[in-house]
Image (cartoon, rainbow, N blue to C red; front, side, top):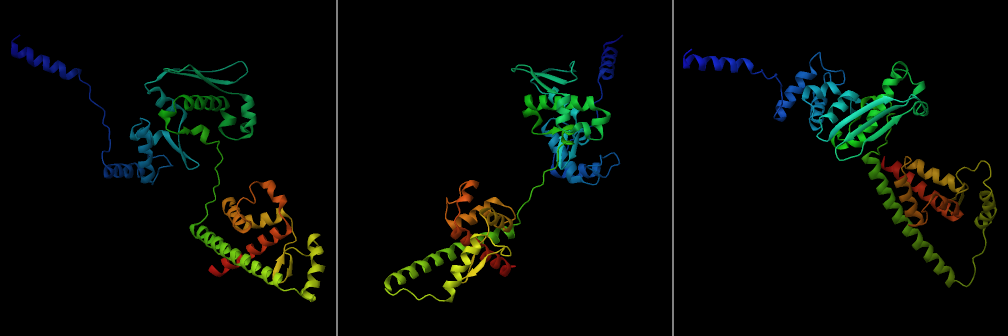
Length: 335
């Protein structure tokens, strides 16, 4: 065989031993990612969480890339449960197994039927997490329909695995939880105050602060005038009415929910808990706004703890009630 023939034969042999690389789409720009996400979202193979939602597809691909998953692996293994992205149990283990610190994992059920997962990371002692039948009962999973009834051992295994993996490989998982665990989480209801309402409360507090200062100045002026006048003022019908009305408010007489009108003010007849509930209701149960209101009316530091409510005097409750009525009136005017 000639040298030329040997060269040709060697090239042919080399070509036959090379393996063809699999075709893989990896977007490099934002536009490429959006185009690729649209193709996936319009495909019949797209999971229902991503069907017709290219924006969700792109975010899932980005989250998957942060934990080492390819775009298609991200779409198949990231699930959106209760509005929160999560990884299926097997893919979570796969992510941790590709981590440079992963050494080994052992999963089994002990004699009591408890799921046990022990995982070893380089530089750390073996870490074990368990999920027992008692945990199933305490969590109410024994009465939950679905996988907890048909595949209880598998669900227990996944729960122990999720705890162990998240404890030892938090850096690899980047906060992602296991899908099997997320399915059992109750959605949290969060009440967000609208900006208009928040601005309105701020303006009301400012006006009440100014009003409180004017009331104090007026009271100080009246006290000075009374001290200069040697002759005490003659009693009139209003004073007599005040003397007869106060005992009724102190005893919280029936049919007097708001209080009695005395000299243009309302004398509050309820308890400290009642006035606190009134303030909380006005501020949509937002403690920060309610406590800021009380601080503006009674002074900072007057109510530091809930038990301090019991020390409110009749005058303080009356002052709170009247300020609250002014705030409500301002709100109605602005609306």
